[in-house]
Length: 329
Image (cartoon, rainbow, N blue to C red):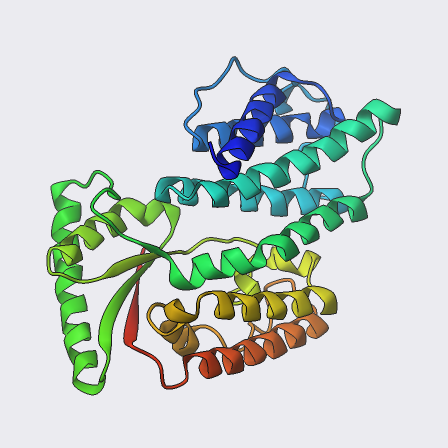
């Protein structure tokens, strides 16, 4: 078993214990039990007897029924949305992407559990914020590569598709054929096809990939998730990033982006980067409605501009494939 496999098994074993424990302040007990069970379901582990924590319905009327109403709650809501991304990667067979989210969950749970055992208290929100920030800094390079290059579709990567879905895939496939033909008139390079989809639309995307594969098209998948990593290199940031974004994180994100471009030099000129340059990177951050302050919007704008410059320089004249990105929703 390799290192990723060993870490995965250890994390999975620990998560299996959490629904049966009462190791945190009672208001947060249900949160951790629920998300532990979600991760176990993601990993294909049957439920193991339910939670030992009181249900929300059993809490006192004055108790906390929603963990999003204070600083800790906002951080836990961000963590929960990050955990929800794990299922998409599990369906793609990307064990490492699932693992890093499992380990983040365990780190945050351990902080709550330790503080409860020490003095029946809660961890400092800044302590939890620091753990999530470290996660963003440590794994940004790998997550950027996943988001830009995707996962190649193969004969073993599929999902059940009924006749209606297959019929729709054929129709979309014909539209893609027309778009590829149009692009081919002006492109001196090959044409690749990317499929961007959410977890809920993965079966439809799989049916489409099979339709395209039969025509000899190269297809790859890009996750359309609300991951905290997404706004660090693509337009369309979830509000949660406002909890962590500052000069330091923006600087780390740019360095991670540069390392990713260097590590994937061949892929940069072959796969999804050209699409992202044209349709994502370099575009302005939304001006309002995403929880970002004026300073944070400016940070993202400068980050996107810097990344666009580095991407254009990395592609240079070496681009050997024009990639067309299609969303399935």
